[in-house]
Amino acid sequence: MQRAELVLGQIIGTLDNTLAATALLGASFVGMQAFEWSKLISEGVRPWENPFGAAQFGSTFFMLTGFHGAHVTVGAIMLTRSAEEEAEDALA
Image 1 (cartoon, helix red, strand yellow):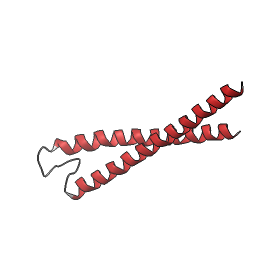
Image 2 (cartoon, helix red, strand yellow):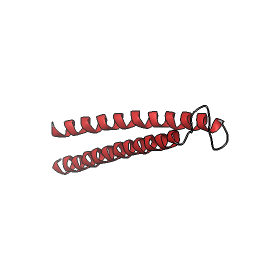
Image 3 (cartoon, helix red, strand yellow):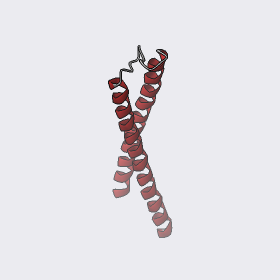
């Protein structure tokens, strides 16, 4: 029984680290996306215009990356909360 508890503790510890690492990678992705958006906006790309070519590029790019960024942000928040709950349960 003691061996099973030890293995379970190791699995939970690995799960906590994996959840935290995934949340951190998601947050870094959103940070890089914000940097890219600010760079494009400063160069004149807007959802309604694009000085470099096709006007629909801006609306398509900002819509797709915006929805993806929102999805990643919500996922990172949920992963962080899950990791916190797992850590609390492991300490109990």
